[in-house]
Image 1 (cartoon, rainbow, N blue to C red):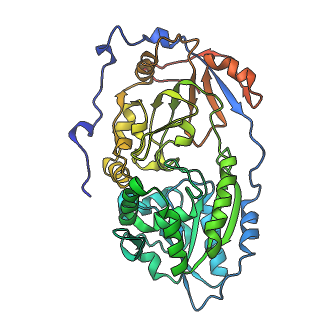
Image 2: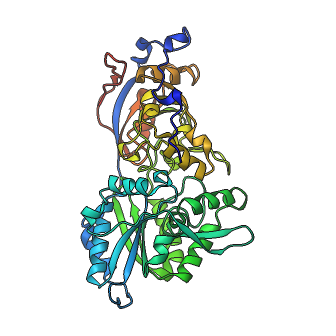
Image 3: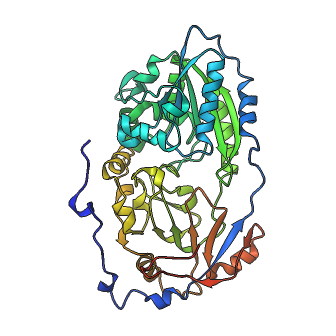
Length: 444
């Protein structure tokens, strides 16, 4: 796919907010917004020793005796999972100890711009390289048809995965941002979409518009029936994005066991502990954080052809300040924001963003929101468009990203909510929001 760099986005054009006086609030009004940091109290459910937990679950597997250098493809996705590189490396060591010859196969659909180099780069951003893992990475994008689910519904599978003797699928189990079902984001989705590469992922999302997502289970079952999947390694994170559960599942049991683990994963999902927010300010969005950059289960907002969602915490305006470093310029999900800083636009890899959005049939998620150069300008635009609300009554939450909700800032309008919630504690006195000479926030 050619690099998409329209002239407008070679450098984000500066927009002078003074074109809108007297509608936009002044800097002096913004500085009346008082902030304080808060902490959410979570259960102590972090795995204390990941290496031991992983060893304990792997040792109970009954694997077939490895023949001479049987090759095992370890399917690894594009999500930033706690201690992912260490888990992959230990899985490699375990397979080698059992006499297998492992390789790594990216299982991430069209992510990484649907290219071999792009998918290698995604893995490298998590510390997963041939040098560090000590095994080859086979990132080819070729697929072939392994069957069909009905008329005009072919099933595609990675050529690299087809050529190995066995497979291991490794992924996090969690709620999906696009739909609700008995199987959402996890091992089965990786088997179907991830190993379907760009061709399969694009087709399946098209089918979902009219047919829903039943095919995740159907395709996963087809692959499990036809290929030797030694095991799936299911990972669940807690409210602080730390590993809280690791479980090796025999291949034939993946589907039913994953359905039960999804229930557990949803119980451990974090949330913003307030509702009816005026502004949600997010420091960064990215593919390493969520498939759509910012998890719709956290923001409560989703625009999609299969249905729009507006739920808790019912946010009037979402303001995004930047892209995560590990997203590699993929700004998929930026269209879910109302206002962004121009830094987001300047950092975008248009080709990767468009490829991802169009594969998921979601061009709206690659749409460019209103943008300005500074925090001061962006917040002023947000404040103007939420109605007549004084700075002291403003209900603003400022988070790093949707994966980290333990410590964050809130505005003074949420003081009563804090006092009524025993799981939230205020960590500092209220103090005015501060801006530097360039108009960007200096609170930290």
